[in-house]
Image (cartoon, rainbow, N blue to C red; front, side, top):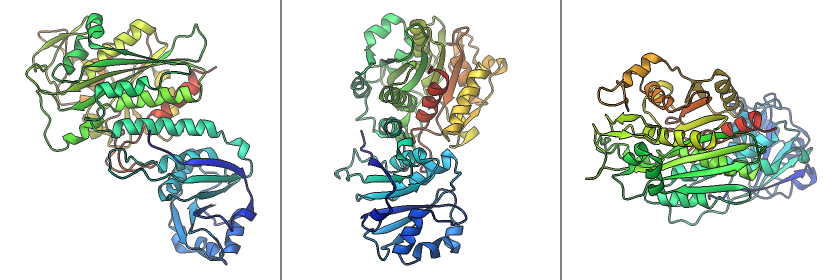
Length: 487
């Protein structure tokens, strides 16, 4: 996994500021009032800090933005980074401020003078995620990550272990989504998940022969044209009561999507290495739950396939049989993610009888047309469950927006030859995709479908990291588990 900065939490010691090397970070609220540590920095640099916070340049900074004062006189540091952050900042603002610290950090030490900051844990998490840099496939040796020292009035109030677990969960998801398809094959993906096993997390890999016995004709049809074998990986974390039904998380893991015989345009096809984003999020959540020893029962299932054109590949017009028993007319082989999810969702319900189920997928371009790269689409058959997730996503600053379902959309999927088609018309494509999946949700199972096509790898750099995979959803789902499934 990509290395993240090491960190230490210490009680504030203003005598250590003058000799601190590398970078020193000062948090300054809107009014420019300096705390004890800030006043010491100002004295050391002969008033330069105060002059800056009284300047027009500081006034133009948004909450969470930062500016460097280079080579401050009277200090060993090479720079003082001034971060505008209110003492009443939100979690999202504090994480954005932390990301500014992490993105600016070099290889040297970083001293963060957090003082009495109320959101110190959020600030720290933002710094760790902001420093993330995917260099696994470059010829350069990974640069050493900085050592972050955070000085606080009450360092014992920050749960550093949980912050570390959250950062590593997001980083694991980012690594998976950023990896190219010639490296992250279905087999190597399964191997990376198998390596997570231990300390209470069990990982089981179902191979093609077993998937055939289970009747997963939809999933197997997607991968039949690829040299990479299709697989389903089942991760189980049973940290709750033995008699409690688990929460099931199901992820689409299409390691590369050409569109199959319904071939995608060449322009932008390289981005289809991220079409396993749903499986990546499920994997990061399961690692996080294990690391923080969550007192909940959660199962994570991912369907791993590759959608390739080949002489054996699935054709438009083919009819396949799902594990549920429904037959599906494949109108478009590029609408493959829903076929994968249909079988894995049914298997999850048959085997685990979950208390509720969430599926995640980079499913449709239509959701990007509707919501852009700011929000994931949230579809659900249960208002309470949907509300709980939306509340968790808002608390973690991860954009999510509830979308409709309805019989009129489902009618678009009516097939003349089979029980259902895999696509409808061009209108409401994200909704008809969700209606297809809804068909594979058993009566009485609260269910959420998250279409993350726009947020898994946004067009611009996400707030908490560099351009590329965002890791969206790991924190929101972790919060959903913490708030709703841990006693």
